[in-house]
Amino acid sequence: MSIELSDYPLAICQAAQTIAEIDYELSAMRQLINAFEGRADMLVAANLKLKNESQRRAHRFQLLQFNQEYQKALDLVMQLNTEKTNAIAHLEYLRNQFAVAKLEARLALAQQLAGLETRELIGF
Image (cartoon, rainbow, N blue to C red):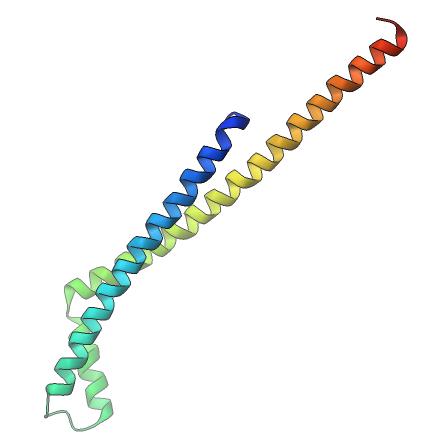
């Protein structure tokens, strides 16, 4: 995928916005996960049948294990983390491509200028 030099800033900006959107979604999912865990903690704390910390941890784990919404949220966080990693890699790729394209443009300009100077020296 080769794009024009002038198109890189917009492409880089869009890639950065994608990362920001994924971060927002991750934040929302983390809040949802915290809410599920808070509810599980409240249920465990209210259960007087649980005698010790091991029983409370096991019951909390069981409540969260069987909560399909909680499991979906965890899966989505993993998926979003992968998407974010890929989006960061894409952003870095665009930045590197832009740097190379700038260098190539400078080289082409320098070669053109050197060619003009050579022609002037030999009288063309």
